[in-house]
Length: 459
Ligand code: PHE
Image (cartoon, rainbow, N blue to C red; front, side):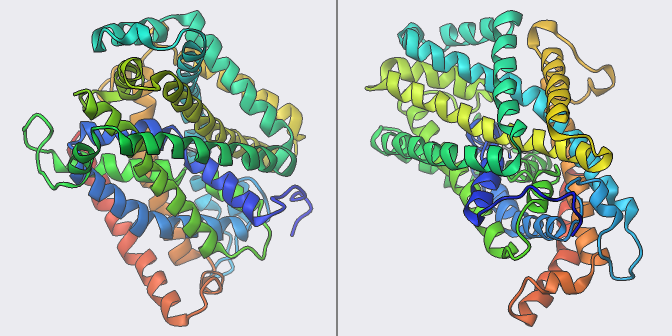
């Protein structure tokens, strides 16, 4: 292997925690519950589960196989030298890395803004508690809107969040990301378990079961479900949540030891991530239902609806503080992987040293996060059809277009171009390998393509 790859994950546990840290983020804790709520619940959940497990896992394995056989940590450059069936260089597939890295950058700019709000709610819990929200959703929504349109306050939190992430990436894979993950991820699991115990004990548990699992082809208000829309939302949410199609897993995989068992590691990450999404559902919805809250209340779900509950339920203050700390930690380990993806792409392509690269990338993300501040009211005119503010536009652009296209290309690359023996080498049984290979070549691209097109038609 080339000498550029001198930093690495020292232990398999470190790799798994860092990759799970990338996967588990706002996507699971903030996005999954509110999107499930907006899309009627059970059908969204069923499609989500299918795409996370039956499609996400093979794609995760594929991204890890790509990373494992890379000779460069840049998700763009690595395609210049990837071993292929016909020994020619698959340079065109560098588009996988280019699109994935750009998407990671765009996501980082709005991700930081949302994560920043969790800092505000965390600090509010510490300094005052949540009793001011007891009056109800109106009051809570007013607080939320005041926060997100307060350029200074929302801006400072986003920048603080990015700076913390920069500090971690500054120290590299082993000394920065691996070490931080070994502290932050166990903390995250402990907090989640505390919140879950509360979820099981609060009154809304049965309603949550019903909401998540009883089949129903309507939205919560009774109108017919738009299945195309729900399908693309659920599929992209599953891939986003697993950090697939965004170069993040390919990049982390390029730092792993060459004897890592790709299938076992991928399986654990997919499992953790999916479990956490559901645990988040069970931590959020019971609290909500026990007070008659609306699960379809959109992106403000966690911030607006839950805080009302924290004002009234027993131990609400401490539960609230934990919830927003959880959101913060999960988001931190995720944005770290986005930053690392961009940093590795630049280092691998230019040979710039890490530290200045991290600083440059950090500054760019800070500037991007400023543009995303709702107070500025910026929107991209030609994306007006997707959404009316920059955060939602970037979210829809990456979710509905970049992620489906890139995951499609990944399946095609590993299925058709990459040296077949390298894929088969990951399996102990030749039969299973043959099945996987056929599935990756013909079924996965078809599924992703169908949902992608149905999503575009439903726009
Ligand atoms: N998977 C992360 C989440 O669920 C988001 C993410 C996107 C992480 C892109 C890395 C790269 O929130």
